[in-house]
Image (cartoon, rainbow, N blue to C red):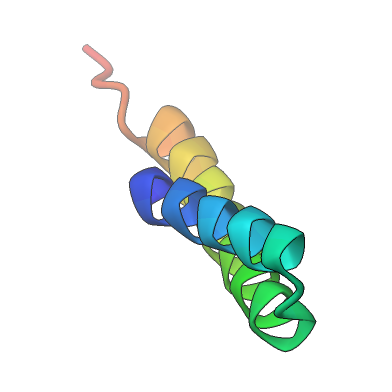
Length: 53
């Protein structure tokens, strides 16, 4: 999931550089959402993924 967030971030940067600001904004928004989901899942896996015993 982090891979896709980075890919959309790169797409946003390239689109913004080339002047396609609508596509850049959309790609940046998708990248932000994917990154937040990744962070939430990472924290959940850290908390609940440890075996006790």
